[in-house]
Image (cartoon, rainbow, N blue to C red; front, side, top):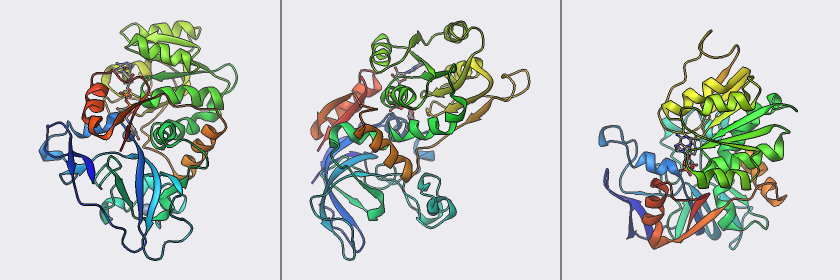
Amino acid sequence: MKAVQYREIGAAPQVVSVPDPEPGPGQVLLRVDAAGVCHSDIAVMSWPAESFPYGLPLTLGHEGAGTVAALGAGVTGLAEGDPVAVYAPQGCGRCPKCAQGKENYCLRAAELGIFPPGLGAPGAMAEYLLIDDARHLLPLQGLDPVTSVPLTDAGLTPYHAIKRSLPKLTPGTTAVVIGVGGLGHVAVQLLRALTPSRVIALDVAEDKLALARAVGAHETVVSDEHAADRVRELTGGQGAEAVFDFVGAQPTVAAAGAVAAVEADVSVVGLGGGALPVGIGTTAFDVAVAAPYWGSRGELGEVLQLARDGAVEVHVETFGLDEAPLAYERLHAGKINGRAVVLP
Ligand code: NAD
Ligand code: ZN
Ligand code: ZN
């Protein structure tokens, strides 16, 4: 089969031919219908050899949706032809976090060598994808795989971050979204669907700000050195009760801290490497900063349901499997509006 692989540190991904996988006992083979292109892959492909945590070559793609093609021995509850979405932040299934469905926070994944597809294990950017356990597959139930595959990360990750802050997002409050790309444009919609808050979106690119307005942001602000002042101004000097930073670079985490109101939540989701110091006199009183990672299995089910209900709609740009390297190039250059999705 064809697969999109990162093969050599620092080199662009390549479309190659690899053996078709076959499901062993307990495993499920998917015919991949759609695979999302995440900015985290660009971060992964920028890591130096010394700190690269995965084996190479690595088949990319940690957002996957497909059709069950074959079942390994002993698999029940699924049938060939079932359309499914992949829950990729897989854990051991047994530790206290996994028992709650929070496999993204599995306490034993590292020790057991469990990696998500596309982030250590062979990923979804291929014609077929092997899944180790049927519990990692959620039924699409009528959702289009192409527009819903980004929900498995670009939807789930902001949903998990926003859910934590829902108690703070009461009427009259403000939520700030920094970076209106794949994750950010879903975050704006989730905030509109789940909260009565005013949503202010920040980005460096005018077309991304236009997308933010199109998907429901009340205000948009150019993300420059004046952005924090502008957000303070728009909130009558109070700042925002929740800030979601989908860039995570030093200037954006600094802006996130500067606009955080008293008792605000700041979630740093982006892998930009910035750090936000919290302290009396540094941030407003009682500001809480978190660095969330992906989301739980249950939360993925909730995000998919929001899409079925029409509360979120991912804007996608599609690419053939052979064009996947181009999709990464365009994402790197900031030229994707919404999410790029590869159709193997
Ligand atoms: P993306 O490229 O689709 O979107 C990033 C957006 O940020 C773009 O619209 C870009 O114009 C904007 N941007 C860049 N610099 C900015 C700045 N200084 N101020 C404001 N906006 C700026 O990326 P994505 O796939 O949505 O991923 C977003 C980030 O989240 C990445 O860092 C990714 O690695 C990370 N991520 C984290 C998790 C997690 O679990 N923590 C999960 C998925 C992705
Ligand atoms: Zn991702
Ligand atoms: Zn576990």
